[in-house]
Image 1 (cartoon, rainbow, N blue to C red):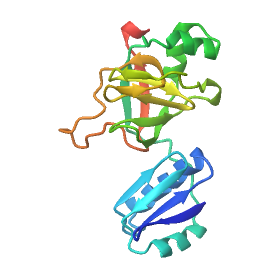
Image 2: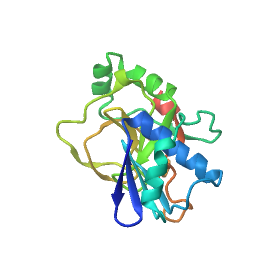
Image 3: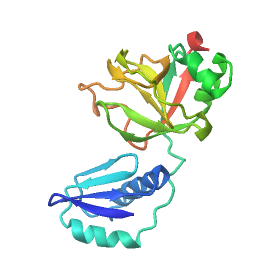
Image 4: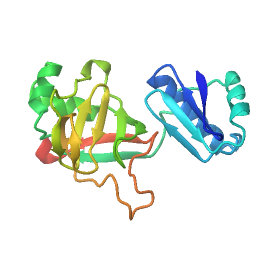
Length: 207
Protein backbone atom coordinates (compact mmCIF):
# COMPACT_ATOMS: atom_id res chain seq x y z
CA UNK A 1 0.00 0.00 0.00
CA UNK A 2 1.35 3.41 -0.96
CA UNK A 3 -0.31 6.78 -0.32
CA UNK A 4 0.45 9.65 -2.69
CA UNK A 5 -0.59 13.28 -2.05
CA UNK A 6 -2.94 14.81 -4.64
CA UNK A 7 -3.18 18.55 -4.18
CA UNK A 8 -3.66 19.91 -0.66
CA UNK A 9 -6.56 17.77 0.57
CA UNK A 10 -6.49 14.44 -1.21
CA UNK A 11 -4.64 11.13 -1.22
CA UNK A 12 -4.31 8.49 -3.92
CA UNK A 13 -3.78 5.10 -2.27
CA UNK A 14 -2.15 2.48 -4.50
CA UNK A 15 -2.86 -1.19 -3.78
CA UNK A 16 -1.31 -4.43 -5.03
CA UNK A 17 -4.27 -5.76 -7.02
CA UNK A 18 -8.03 -5.63 -7.50
CA UNK A 19 -8.80 -7.82 -4.49
CA UNK A 20 -6.74 -5.66 -2.14
CA UNK A 21 -8.33 -2.55 -3.60
CA UNK A 22 -11.84 -3.94 -3.03
CA UNK A 23 -10.96 -4.87 0.54
CA UNK A 24 -9.48 -1.43 1.27
CA UNK A 25 -12.50 0.34 -0.24
CA UNK A 26 -14.85 -1.83 1.82
CA UNK A 27 -12.84 -1.06 4.97
CA UNK A 28 -13.11 2.67 4.29
CA UNK A 29 -16.89 2.37 3.94
CA UNK A 30 -17.14 0.30 7.14
CA UNK A 31 -15.14 2.85 9.11
CA UNK A 32 -17.14 5.75 7.71
CA UNK A 33 -20.43 4.01 8.60
CA UNK A 34 -19.09 3.38 12.12
CA UNK A 35 -18.12 7.04 12.50
CA UNK A 36 -14.41 6.30 12.99
CA UNK A 37 -13.15 7.54 9.62
CA UNK A 38 -11.82 11.11 9.50
CA UNK A 39 -14.08 13.42 7.45
CA UNK A 40 -13.65 12.84 3.73
CA UNK A 41 -15.77 14.28 0.92
CA UNK A 42 -15.34 11.54 -1.68
CA UNK A 43 -14.02 7.97 -1.82
CA UNK A 44 -13.38 6.89 -5.41
CA UNK A 45 -12.10 3.36 -6.12
CA UNK A 46 -10.43 2.33 -9.38
CA UNK A 47 -8.73 -0.86 -10.60
CA UNK A 48 -5.76 -0.63 -8.20
CA UNK A 49 -6.20 2.71 -6.46
CA UNK A 50 -8.60 4.53 -4.16
CA UNK A 51 -8.81 8.33 -4.16
CA UNK A 52 -9.78 10.07 -0.93
CA UNK A 53 -10.72 13.69 -1.54
CA UNK A 54 -11.54 16.40 0.97
CA UNK A 55 -9.31 15.27 3.86
CA UNK A 56 -8.43 17.80 6.54
CA UNK A 57 -5.05 16.19 7.21
CA UNK A 58 -3.93 14.01 4.28
CA UNK A 59 -0.43 13.50 5.69
CA UNK A 60 -1.75 12.36 9.05
CA UNK A 61 -4.23 10.04 7.39
CA UNK A 62 -1.45 8.51 5.27
CA UNK A 63 0.65 7.87 8.38
CA UNK A 64 -2.27 6.16 10.10
CA UNK A 65 -2.77 3.76 7.19
CA UNK A 66 0.30 1.75 8.19
CA UNK A 67 -1.64 0.12 11.02
CA UNK A 68 -4.70 -0.75 8.95
CA UNK A 69 -5.87 -4.29 8.34
CA UNK A 70 -8.52 -4.50 5.64
CA UNK A 71 -10.79 -7.53 5.49
CA UNK A 72 -12.37 -8.93 2.33
CA UNK A 73 -15.60 -7.21 1.25
CA UNK A 74 -18.71 -8.52 2.97
CA UNK A 75 -20.39 -11.06 0.70
CA UNK A 76 -23.58 -10.95 2.76
CA UNK A 77 -24.73 -7.61 1.39
CA UNK A 78 -28.54 -8.03 1.21
CA UNK A 79 -29.28 -5.67 -1.66
CA UNK A 80 -28.48 -7.08 -5.10
CA UNK A 81 -29.38 -5.37 -8.36
CA UNK A 82 -30.86 -7.82 -10.85
CA UNK A 83 -30.51 -6.97 -14.53
CA UNK A 84 -32.73 -8.87 -17.00
CA UNK A 85 -30.65 -9.73 -20.07
CA UNK A 86 -31.34 -11.03 -23.55
CA UNK A 87 -28.20 -12.95 -24.44
CA UNK A 88 -28.33 -11.89 -28.07
CA UNK A 89 -25.10 -9.90 -28.51
CA UNK A 90 -23.26 -9.85 -31.86
CA UNK A 91 -20.10 -11.24 -30.22
CA UNK A 92 -21.83 -14.12 -28.44
CA UNK A 93 -20.48 -16.77 -30.83
CA UNK A 94 -16.96 -15.35 -30.63
CA UNK A 95 -17.02 -15.34 -26.83
CA UNK A 96 -18.35 -18.90 -26.84
CA UNK A 97 -15.44 -19.95 -29.06
CA UNK A 98 -12.96 -18.26 -26.72
CA UNK A 99 -14.53 -20.07 -23.78
CA UNK A 100 -14.66 -23.36 -25.66
CA UNK A 101 -18.42 -23.82 -25.15
CA UNK A 102 -21.56 -23.73 -27.33
CA UNK A 103 -23.09 -20.24 -27.67
CA UNK A 104 -26.08 -21.17 -25.50
CA UNK A 105 -23.71 -21.96 -22.62
CA UNK A 106 -22.50 -18.35 -22.42
CA UNK A 107 -25.80 -17.22 -20.89
CA UNK A 108 -25.72 -20.00 -18.31
CA UNK A 109 -22.12 -19.37 -17.29
CA UNK A 110 -22.44 -15.60 -17.18
CA UNK A 111 -25.75 -15.50 -15.32
CA UNK A 112 -24.55 -18.06 -12.75
CA UNK A 113 -21.90 -15.66 -11.45
CA UNK A 114 -22.48 -13.07 -8.72
CA UNK A 115 -20.89 -9.80 -9.71
CA UNK A 116 -19.66 -6.83 -7.72
CA UNK A 117 -19.06 -3.31 -9.01
CA UNK A 118 -15.34 -2.84 -8.45
CA UNK A 119 -15.29 0.76 -9.67
CA UNK A 120 -17.00 3.12 -12.11
CA UNK A 121 -15.68 5.14 -15.02
CA UNK A 122 -15.53 5.56 -18.80
CA UNK A 123 -19.05 7.04 -18.89
CA UNK A 124 -21.60 8.12 -16.26
CA UNK A 125 -23.24 5.01 -14.87
CA UNK A 126 -20.72 2.54 -16.32
CA UNK A 127 -19.56 0.03 -13.73
CA UNK A 128 -16.63 -2.38 -14.01
CA UNK A 129 -18.02 -5.62 -12.60
CA UNK A 130 -15.91 -8.49 -11.31
CA UNK A 131 -17.15 -12.00 -10.60
CA UNK A 132 -16.40 -14.24 -13.57
CA UNK A 133 -13.66 -16.81 -12.96
CA UNK A 134 -10.30 -15.82 -14.45
CA UNK A 135 -10.53 -18.47 -17.18
CA UNK A 136 -13.41 -16.53 -18.77
CA UNK A 137 -11.43 -13.32 -19.33
CA UNK A 138 -11.59 -12.27 -22.99
CA UNK A 139 -9.64 -9.71 -25.02
CA UNK A 140 -11.11 -6.52 -26.35
CA UNK A 141 -12.06 -6.46 -30.00
CA UNK A 142 -9.11 -5.62 -32.29
CA UNK A 143 -11.19 -2.85 -33.89
CA UNK A 144 -13.59 -0.94 -31.59
CA UNK A 145 -17.10 -0.18 -32.76
CA UNK A 146 -17.89 3.46 -33.44
CA UNK A 147 -21.26 3.12 -31.68
CA UNK A 148 -22.34 0.53 -29.11
CA UNK A 149 -26.10 0.54 -28.36
CA UNK A 150 -27.21 1.53 -24.85
CA UNK A 151 -27.92 -1.44 -22.60
CA UNK A 152 -25.29 -3.62 -24.24
CA UNK A 153 -23.84 -6.19 -21.82
CA UNK A 154 -20.17 -6.59 -22.60
CA UNK A 155 -16.96 -8.34 -21.57
CA UNK A 156 -13.34 -7.20 -21.65
CA UNK A 157 -10.46 -8.72 -19.71
CA UNK A 158 -11.78 -9.80 -16.29
CA UNK A 159 -14.67 -7.30 -16.35
CA UNK A 160 -18.33 -7.23 -17.32
CA UNK A 161 -19.92 -3.89 -18.09
CA UNK A 162 -23.21 -2.46 -19.33
CA UNK A 163 -23.12 0.53 -21.67
CA UNK A 164 -25.45 3.17 -20.14
CA UNK A 165 -25.69 5.10 -23.41
CA UNK A 166 -24.57 4.83 -27.02
CA UNK A 167 -20.82 5.34 -27.32
CA UNK A 168 -17.75 3.95 -29.07
CA UNK A 169 -16.43 0.77 -27.48
CA UNK A 170 -14.21 -2.23 -28.00
CA UNK A 171 -15.72 -4.70 -25.53
CA UNK A 172 -17.24 -8.03 -26.59
CA UNK A 173 -21.04 -7.68 -26.70
CA UNK A 174 -22.93 -10.72 -25.40
CA UNK A 175 -26.38 -9.36 -24.55
CA UNK A 176 -28.80 -6.50 -24.02
CA UNK A 177 -30.75 -5.13 -21.05
CA UNK A 178 -33.54 -2.56 -21.04
CA UNK A 179 -32.68 -1.43 -17.50
CA UNK A 180 -31.72 2.26 -17.30
CA UNK A 181 -28.23 2.50 -15.80
CA UNK A 182 -27.99 6.30 -15.71
CA UNK A 183 -30.90 8.67 -15.12
CA UNK A 184 -30.15 12.27 -14.03
CA UNK A 185 -33.72 12.55 -12.73
CA UNK A 186 -33.15 9.62 -10.34
CA UNK A 187 -31.47 9.83 -6.93
CA UNK A 188 -28.86 8.52 -7.16
CA UNK A 189 -28.55 8.92 -10.91
CA UNK A 190 -26.33 5.84 -11.27
CA UNK A 191 -27.99 2.47 -10.66
CA UNK A 192 -24.60 0.84 -10.06
CA UNK A 193 -22.12 2.17 -7.52
CA UNK A 194 -18.83 0.70 -6.26
CA UNK A 195 -19.58 -2.24 -4.00
CA UNK A 196 -23.02 -2.95 -5.48
CA UNK A 197 -23.81 -6.65 -6.00
CA UNK A 198 -25.24 -7.51 -9.40
CA UNK A 199 -26.85 -10.58 -10.95
CA UNK A 200 -27.73 -10.97 -14.61
CA UNK A 201 -31.03 -12.77 -15.18
CA UNK A 202 -31.64 -14.29 -18.64
CA UNK A 203 -34.98 -13.29 -20.12
CA UNK A 204 -37.09 -15.77 -22.06
CA UNK A 205 -35.83 -14.33 -25.34
CA UNK A 206 -32.24 -14.72 -24.20
CA UNK A 207 -32.34 -18.31 -22.95
